[in-house]
Amino acid sequence: MRAFRRAAVTAVTVCGLVALAGCGGRGDGVGRAGGAALAVDALGCPDLDGTYQVSLPPEREGSQAGAMEEAFRRPDGNRVPIEQIQTVDIHRDGPGAYTFRWRIADERVRQQLEVIREFDKPRYGRWYHLLSDPERARYIAAHGQAGYDAELARLGPETEFVRELRPGAGMACKGGWLELPRGELRPMRLTRGDDGSVIGEFKGLKTVGVTVWCGDGCRDLPIPTGAFVGEIHWPRLSGDPRWRPGDPRALQRPLDEIEAEEAQRAQAQRDADARRYLPEAEIRARIEAMAPAGTTVERVEVREGKVHVRYTAPVADEDTLQGRIAGASRDAFAPKEVVHGGWSNDRSRVYVEFVLTDSPLVLRDAQAAADAAPPAPTMAVLSVAPPQAPPAGMGAPAAIRDRLSALLPPKCAITDVRYGGEKVTLLGAADSNRTVSDALRALDGAGTRPELLSIRQDGGKVHFEIVLAPTALTRG
Image 1 (tube, rainbow, N blue to C red):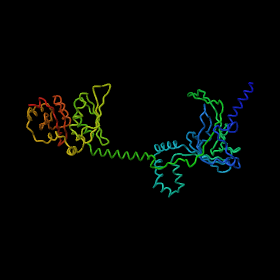
Image 2 (tube, one colour):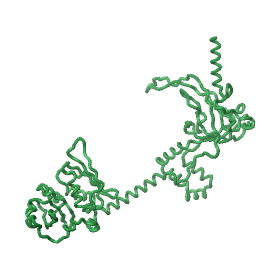
Image 3 (cartoon, rainbow, N blue to C red):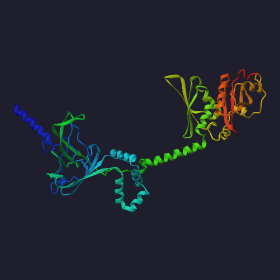
Image 4 (cartoon, one colour):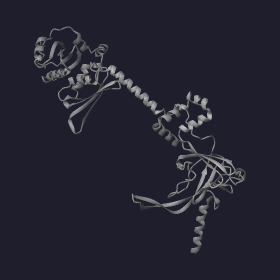
């Protein structure tokens, strides 16, 4: 009985290994074509002409050592994984002679193209422009269509590789099957299926990895544990599935051309910014002159048509500098894109970021910009109205000038005093932006809550307008 069971097991194993040769045929029900469709030649080789979809049979446990490697070995000796093969075009060139064109999958071709575009820019640019006129017409006129096709293939991505089979050591045919030798393993066999497809079988090895020490680390040594027979079924395809680049307008433009355009655009923007805005150092000096004590201007940067400003300040003065800049810029040109932020490890300070575009503080032709902008109503009265009599309860201009002049630093003088409601506007001149900044700090220390309306250089002097809140210093 034991001998009978052993024989039965052996019979089942042999049946599984021979697969197409007997014991039930293929699992998918596709049989071998009849004699007329096989069109066997004088050497017993079948007619396999056609284009077919390439795929592996379902995965099995363990490795499939050598399963398809021989079939996908390129002429240069390198191997192409089956996952990268999409179709195969087979042509019988004569008795026992075939040409296999293994077509690489579209996704893999596009990946190659991306690599060429990024790392071989001249090659990609040449290939890209040859795809369309006038370069295409010019090249064909000089070298012919065949030369043009060859040049495109040379410059572009690899889309296929060719393997020619000739009678001899490279192949053999037996009983209407094309056999491709694969070392010590059973040859891979191909023939035509009764549905017009290519069917076949191959023998693979099951292995298990055994970890061994190789001197520089542990590696898995594959140990054969058995064999299996895999079935091949490549459906026939109609049409021509070869990869083609298509409309050049749908392809990505050469990177070097895009980079050159971006560099040209960036330089044009820098030139425009230089014509429009004052130097960064001068803008920074103007803004720093307005900063209250404890406020630090961290960055002033002119780029992309804007002046980017960032400062840090105590929480109590978070908006002071921003407000002063808004006043000096006139309301229509106040800071834009304002961002406030802070730090979890220091809640006593905050940062403020914003941009300026049309402020007189940053423009080279600030006066022209100010004249072109609609001024705020209060600003028009304060800036251009003739001297006024002091409103009821307000101090006389001379008295206010004397009181406040005592607070100002040297080389800073009040030239006029004007009124607007309960507020007073000081017009004056100083020797530098820093002196104006010191004056603002001094007035702020006296409780007047000063707001810088404008600041400009003229004739070696820095002229300013400062609005003060009502205090004992401005009342009668």
